[in-house]
Image (cartoon, rainbow, N blue to C red):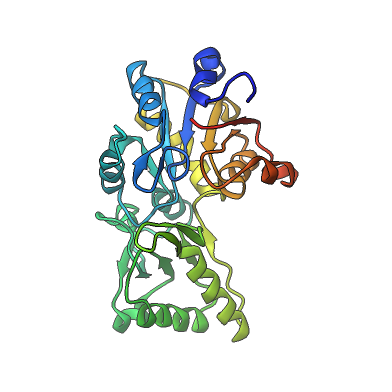
Length: 288
């Protein structure tokens, strides 16, 4: 960090060390709905030299096209093909656990078009059909939650063996609506898990987004699909750049990627010094 204040400066001198770059969004590329300094220029440079990169986001409430539009309004030139969301990991999960065509109860939002339907999973938000469902998928966003969440609770109470899929594990996130922090879908999932446990049922949510493995297991396939003809054989040659020790850095470390921390978001150097070994970044910069 002493020699290279930004990751962009470092990358210009170490481009050959990497096969691809992964970027977190909030606190890394943007904040408060606006692009952070240097983010636009870095993304434009990557497009110019045709260097592989993806934006890795836990936001499953917006489709790839919707997320790209939000980022464009923030001043970031991003196409939907560069967005890999936790909702995309539903396709990986459905494929590996043979859920194609099965009906799941969904509460909250999962993008338009729905990440679940894109994964071949049938979903309903109708409590009257709860008895037909083979599991629960947690959406997110602002919605009238009580009846849908209670319906999910009763299904899992009766069938604790059913999968409870949570694409976005974040418990809180910066909310422009409240000019502060808002509750994420991970918070609601933990509430359901806690109440189910009190009712005598052990149900462990299946988290898909950072720092959990499914979204990282999707990265190589997603890169190969986005950049045909290129090989991505070593996760260590792919950098995950983000501002969260518990999400971006811990997830990258656990899955063999090079972890890069930027101090433009929720983490400062004191937190880095006090972090557990699994949350220690490989590289640290002031910003992208």
